[in-house]
Length: 124
Image (cartoon, rainbow, N blue to C red; front, top):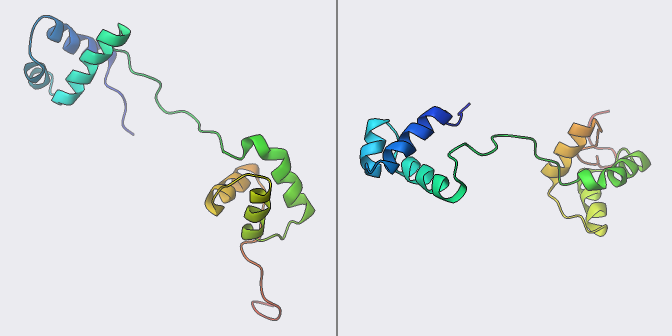
């Protein structure tokens, strides 16, 4: 996985910028892109630091605030097809695509039926 450049490299590159070297010269010397050197210079001017921002982290599911509702809906009708679950959530003002709902259900350990079988169709 890609990681941010070290703070030491950032500080040395910005120090060279502040000493009067051009962005292209600094980029060449430290084997960086010119855009990276420009961004680090801007970051130093605006924040006073070249430290990288937060890296990675966990994104909450958009259904997290509605967790109780989803659990209740699945408990009421565990064989409810995904489309019906999505429609019921839309009736409650929650508009998400089926994949977002599926990921949330998976993360919660809830199972669901993918699609309703027609009468007499499908495996026995």
